[in-house]
Picture 1: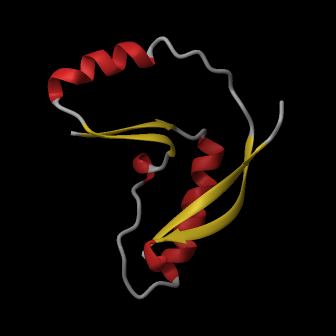
Picture 2 (picture 1 turned 90 degrees about the vertical axis):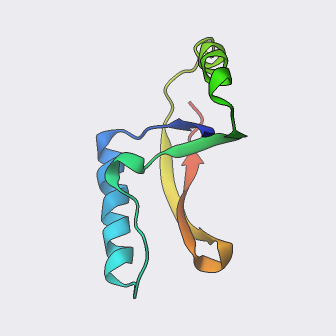
Picture 3 (picture 1 turned 30 degrees about the vertical axis):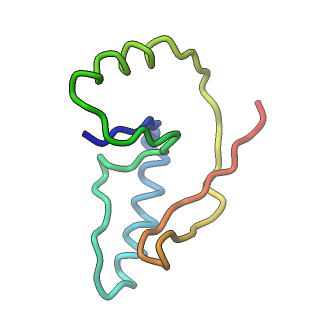
Length: 94
């Protein structure tokens, strides 16, 4: 199983990202576009993990403390020679 650590967006951010996605989709000849439930901010890609290690990873992640933060979508860009789009974030200092 491929695992990564991610943050889900609040509803306002999700709506904004879906609006951007829809505009890109309407201007594209073809492509696969993210479902609303798949939008997230990737923090770290863990990679392929054997199923028996998942519980240990979950236990470790439950010990991580974090505070809410504010960020602004400040740019759009592409990976893979334009095949994969992303929305870049600017983190505000709180």
